Image (cartoon, rainbow, N blue to C red; front, side, top):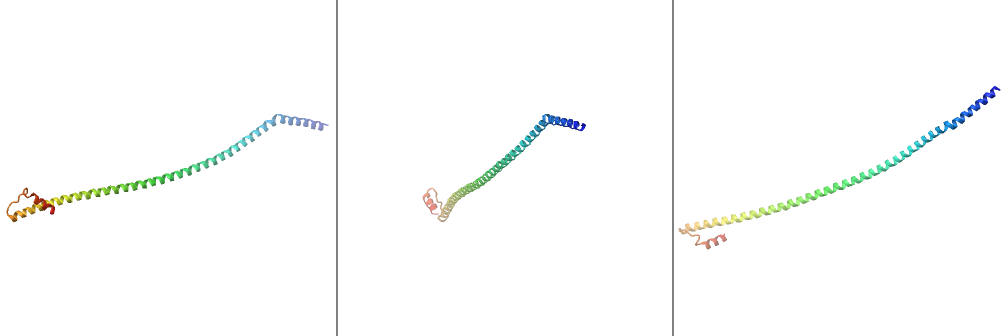
Amino acid sequence: MSINATLIAQLIVFLILVWFTMKFVWPPITKALDERAQKIADGLSAADKAKADLASANKRVEEQLAAARTDAAQRLADAERLAQQMIEEAKGRASDEGAKIIAAAKAEAEQEAVKAREALRDQVAALAVKGAEQILRKEVNASVHADLLNRLKTEL
């Protein structure tokens, strides 16, 4: 009978232990496990959200980089076109300035030629008068023969 009483006593102690564990020990353990599972689930969802945000941010960055590259290429093309235009304008201005300088030089040369012709005419007229004086052996008065001298100048 002592085996039965020991068995019953052990059964009662076991049932009390099961009841005590179910009442006081098991709920905090399950609560801790549930909280841990919830934290893990939250962490996984946050990681998924972060991964999606990262993919979205990478896509936006790529779009912005593409836009920046396009903008930079456009600005570079505009700058090259503007530089070419400025070069063409400078060539045009230089050509115009060269034409003006050439025209001024031609006009100055023409004036110098006219002055040289006038000086040559005066010298030829003076030589002609001197030659006539020597031929006639008398002095020719320039004021008296002004018309004759002017006609001689124009003929030369």
